[in-house]
Length: 137
Length: 408
Image (tube, rainbow over all chains, first blue to last red; front, side):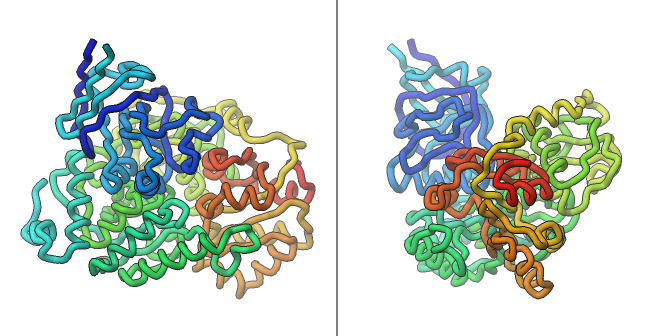
């Protein structure tokens, strides 16, 4: 069954991938082992899981300004999510997405995106249209 | 987005490729946040440490230089990742130092002032009420917005650079009056007494507020914080909550009264001693062994350096101790004999870096440091992702613990 979720206009290109979802937040500096491509902060709900090539779905972005450069650095090594969806992004992650040309959207009309999408869902993200499609068969 | 003729010329590439990149970046970011136009800014401040930028970021900055990038307004920098006078003993590699040198050279060629500090509001040029700026350090932004009444979003490195090049930033978020009104109202029932208490209060408010778009107003404070206390409070709040602005009723400039920021219309939420104790309880306990004690995040002011030196006098540390201060404070502290006193214990004072952005994982591994104690509520929030088990205590308890090799 296909499900269409409207969100605010985002940044980056249209992409398709598998969702990795948690009701938790995101900082590239605080939460990740960027060399290995996994969440590394013990308190994070995705600790130990790989974010490589995933459509990450999280609540909000946290913490430091470094995340903006870090998205660009992660993208340059191709150990990077395909897209990140938030309930609310902060400015830094949007800025980092703009530099890295990483797909990012936030502000979903139908409520909490971490509940609307499940881990393992196949998802198409179209930031220009502000549209996320869940295409599970 | 509405552009002036000059901005249209920038976007058309008539003012060079670097400015074209910068304004194009700003339009993309502004688009996501519905910015109607760009607002001129008086200063930019960029975080550009080699650990975050990596080779890719180094290449990017050098490419900007090759494209003729030159800043249009005063632009300064956040702490570096490598103290070039003291990196081998920390276990930092020649590769890290080389990347650091490349970034410094690129920034200097763009006309950026290498201030290397996250306490520029104490040491360089504090912004003033209503001043639009583009600052790139969450601690700097929250202090400047809240204590000074300036107007800045969190500007990540690329966006701070773009603002430096165009002299503008997209008008969204905290540049707009409506986003500066309070959205949460907290009443403090336990008065903070020293730096770490202020940090813990900030941490809890940040955790409760929990979003970039939430603006806490705090009432019930019977004491006015010093600049250092407000610094620790803000840095922790920004770290725990991604919070860029808070008000203190009767203290901060935009909230002379609770009603000035709309706080009177919000339900009051109490912050009690039990709430603060619960947050602290997550960060270490008496008797825990420690490998390294860190005084940083934010860099220490000259007043903190004096207080630390007074506690250090005549002591010898069993644990490694790292102190980070700014390149502005360091020579003063040297001249006044404070560095000698602090380092007489076996501690090391670093200049122009901050512990968590100087390859914390690699220096931890090189030195066998995992158990970290600090008086900074900000750093204990950050550092666990780098493989440390963090603990929090006041400055005097940190010093006593460094002597004992365990938390006292």
